[in-house]
Amino acid sequence: MGRQPKTEADTVHDRIAVLRADRGVSRKELADAVGVHPQTIGYVERGDYSPSLALALRIARYFDLPVEAIFSLDPLPSLTQELLRRTS
Image (cartoon, rainbow, N blue to C red):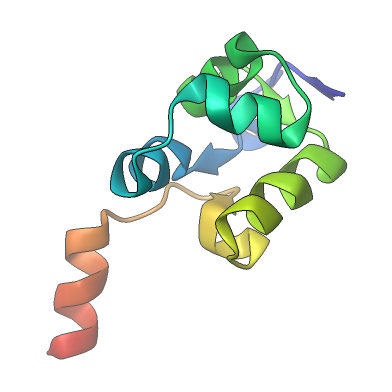
């Protein structure tokens, strides 16, 4: 399914918690929709677990967003920073 990151360079950063909050989706609801245990969603959100490509794509499909809008190998800027950058 996925694995624990061995180094900081292996950590996959994500916006799952932000997207869940924005859409009012619980970890359990997301987990059920993408076919994993709710703990797996928590592990991915905390960076304790790197999702498999298949899981990342299922999560992106669930939120109807490109996978790179949710996941990154580099720390993601806050959405506020992104909006301010785009309006400047």
